[in-house]
Length: 65
Image: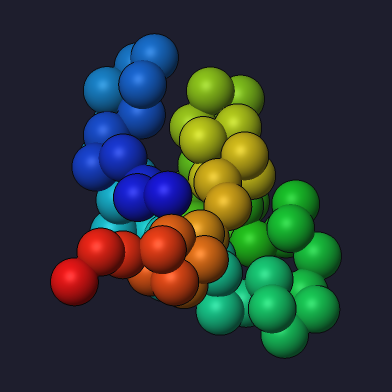
């Protein structure tokens, strides 16, 4: 739901790359190319971004007020 600030395995900062990755992926660009250009070489960092699902809108529907 919320992108981690650092990679869970190696500790590399990746949180600042999420918006760029999401925007380019929604435009239909190849994800391998995006990750390469963002400088993510390790598979652990790549898996964090690829495995992320933006659920904030879905969770917001069930908020108690």
